[in-house]
Length: 297
Image (cartoon, rainbow, N blue to C red; front, top):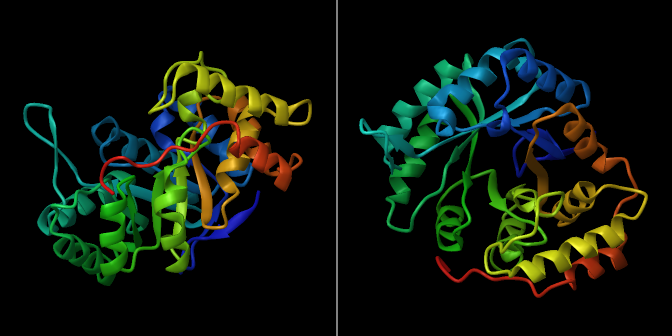
């Protein structure tokens, strides 16, 4: 396993991160999967209070408690569950402070390594939101904070006013929007990117082709064929897709949902198989025209 420094923090995160939302098996299966991830060198585990109404945090808290000092634990806040079962956005200081305490309890830990705002809108009181995260740092309840968002206008606002360590962004061969709007800004400010969605809901690996974002089914097929061409006999399609996501200098880790030990071993091997050559990277980039953000610019 290889590790990257996350932003200006002292956190070293595995280049392959474990997206815990995928943990849907029974306790024994989840324990086997997480223990294998640890054995293979993954130390970065990402969850959110939104996942399974907090149950996902509880699972992670129980299963990873024995290894707490050896891992980087990340969770998210901002989606408030209502009595009728609906979810509303709440980035207020009062709510974030309250939610952090609940996450700490579910995660069975005294501190969260990386606490992320789970989205954000340009209408939020960003100053108040940042105050909450800074206070949690002062209290020792979180070590660092970041943002999980695909909205350039929100990211620019937070970058300009805060000390965030990272931004989690959707990034793949079928979603290259961050290249145009955010990568340069974040790299300039020494803020790391953590990618998600780097296999595009499985479309770049084994799922039947269908339209994705603004791409047609035909364009998706064309992209997958380019991946297959590069993969050849030396690596899997998932490994090519993840190598593409990890290629930009600003990207510290690719968080991916993993459901089986076979998937886990395949994605971890991304770092051990032959890496993409510059010409291969260009070939992939030229498969289809990159998309751009149409909203929240």
